[in-house]
Image (cartoon, rainbow, N blue to C red; front, side, top):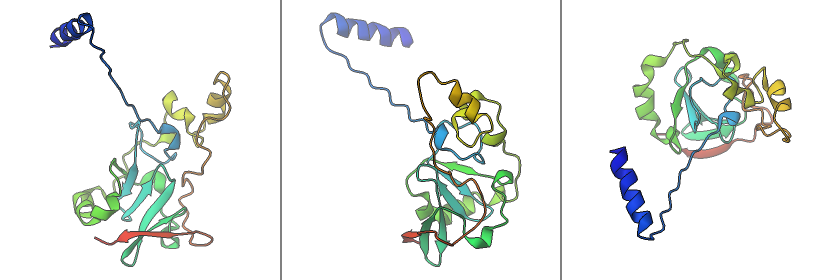
Length: 177
């Protein structure tokens, strides 16, 4: 099959047609929090089935229910102040606004509640995770980057896991499903 495609490209090229190929790779390892699971080059959201909360990786904010509304906040609500993000299961969701389909996900991932078997970025020895500013090897990695200053995301990335509603400018984002 590869030979057939290559032959076709050569024929098109020989006939003078311009061939444009575009490859799009979206990697956001540097934005992923240290408590995120390893193995993913790109993540839009994590779903935390233990507490029915989402984490928006690109905004570095949690998304949780407040009554019938979904709220964005920099910290987990105080009711989750003792929740351990490093020892909880995270489901990777690469779709826009997964919280709007919460009823489905809540049912679909209920069996992951209480699971503690994910390797997290903070503990990874894979160098690709060193670019995360929360990784213990980040400063060493950063110094080794030729001609570049801190290219990793400087945000907190929601690492603390401690709940706090104080000074948290929350924003309602949708109705409960």
